[in-house]
Image (tube, rainbow, N blue to C red; front, side, top):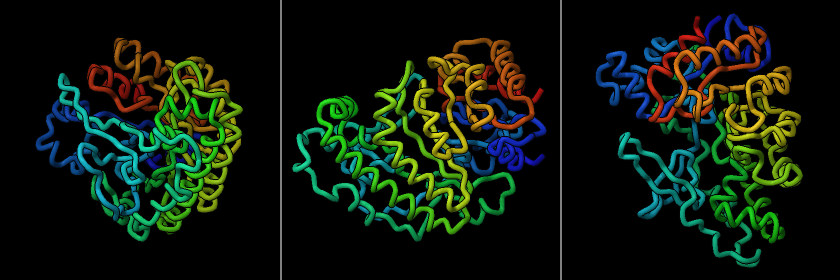
Length: 379
């Protein structure tokens, strides 16, 4: 099977010649791998080298946090004003809807990252009357939906379409819960859900209407050429959801249902990325029609491989499942290989699994562990 065919078969829960895999790592890990394989000018020529690196490690595709392809990720052109200092542009375009982010660095690893949701713009709001009715919907005017850009790697849509291994991905500004949190402040928004429901409902409704309309415009702009709609919403922590499943079902699920319905009209795969222990709400999303559950953080409560297989192997495709929090960082290569063998033993060649690190591989991960992961997948 070719790489794209293998991944599509896995998503559709059909047979595969082997379990497909994806790679995703922080820039620090990427550079270490390029050095390990003796690539030249890797920082300036990542496009020329990324397929070679995939070949070297034995992965089918290079994924981002929520998209099946990091290189095929397209967003509408933003034509609004840039953020004011000290705030920064973030890759998820949250700055375009008034969410503040700042750039930070972990000096020990020369690792840059963007911290989202600093100085929440709605933190001081006390009631609905303090908000403009179109406080977020008016932001739609700041996008040129007729021009979809590849912001990360500047590849054209045609280049991706002509690549038999790649996927065209969309799905910007669709993290409903996280947008609410970043606008209001996470602690404050969680308190609103319990103590100021009228305000919480108004914010969720406004954000939801924006996300649905943004999705519709993205889908229209893609003109049937997109393969994958990926979104992320970290509604869960290590031990379970951040709020009751009933709250998710009442407030957030209806919005997701509308977005998924729009996506399915265009015959596009829908992937939902969520960290943590998500078993109490994931069944709602499966019933709503998602095709891929991304991350599968097996170090979280009740998210081990056996339980994931028991609960979801016949219902949904899992993307991830190789824990980047503890397994890849702390264990030996032999332990990682055993975990891969266990996953392959559970899913076999029936489809429904794309093995990958559960998150971007972090800078403190030993490189031999990364290599061991893909060696075991390809044994």
